[in-house]
Length: 94
Image 1 (cartoon, one colour):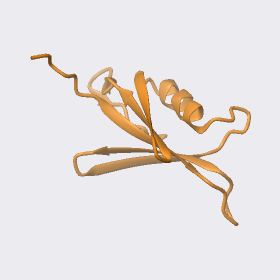
Image 2 (image 1 turned 45 degrees about the vertical axis):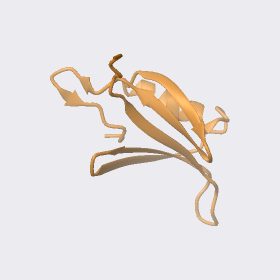
Image 3 (image 1 turned 120 degrees about the horizontal axis):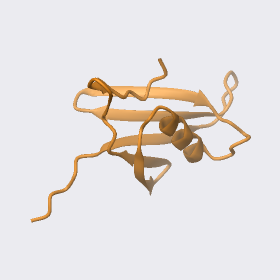
Image 4 (image 1 turned 90 degrees about the vertical axis):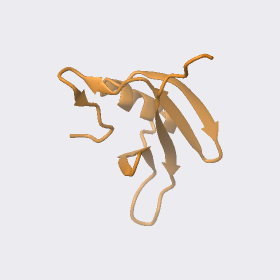
């Protein structure tokens, strides 16, 4: 039987503008009982929320291997868990 690699899954959602906030992109990662989220302003120069999230995550050192489109959101898959000295790579902006 083929072994299936354990991957990280991060959801990307577009948040439409409200009366008080502009358009935003939200990245959500749920692991076990923990949920990490990061929300950023939509970058109209990029013009694509998924592409913006991909650039953000790659700049953090997260290696993305694929994506899946679902109703209203995109799932990004990664095999990146740690960076040097066992530091977990979080999606949050520190």
